[in-house]
Image (tube, rainbow, N blue to C red; front, top):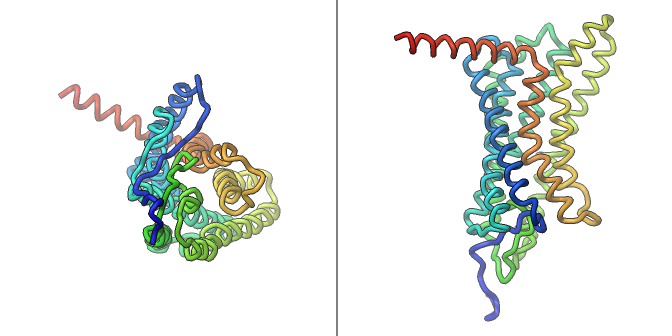
Length: 318
């Protein structure tokens, strides 16, 4: 029961990045450019893996889903963020805010699991190469990916259902550039203990345990690589997992710094720019590092361009 001077909130105000002043338009152009490059790069990887026969290994199958996840995660955040930057703040309905939180949570959790699955794939490829084909068969890989998407969706859905039970009154200002979990929780005037308990119980299964699994697999990978006698063999083995390791460090590092580390001592602006690391930088970083460092993807891109050019010339000649 609310007191008479309490107003039930059904709409939030997202403040975004304040005090941009003359940098608002350049920052808008910068973010928009990164978003276009992110979508182009990730959808290009999805297209290449889906159409090119030389990219039919489990590693590229997982990379395809990682790129799809990155594209969806960016799309759940950036379009609204651009409007917030351009208008120096923007309103969003309660249902729209929870939908954005659910979509972002789904993609973010799925990405955690897909990165974990990719580390397992690299572990089998380097530490147990003779049994790689029998272990990483397509049906098993497909089940791993389906589990990643389904678990991400279920965890995000549970959070949304619990969020829908909260009541918001008086305060409706979100000092962030999107509807993140903690800023929404801070605005509630009802009991949030159930949600806090849910976050406390779920976070280890989303962040800590997968991250520890990645660390353990790379420890085994590292010692296996050291036992390889030839320098060329060590370099080839390391090159197959260096791209994935770089992405893991950026993604998990920024997530843990936001959701696991203590919040005291960090300003809101620092947290906002840290959040940019996993909402914008990692989705952009993935296609760049995988396309620049991977000869198979570069080769597949050349085949795709040649095939597209031949089809265009054939149509023009007709």
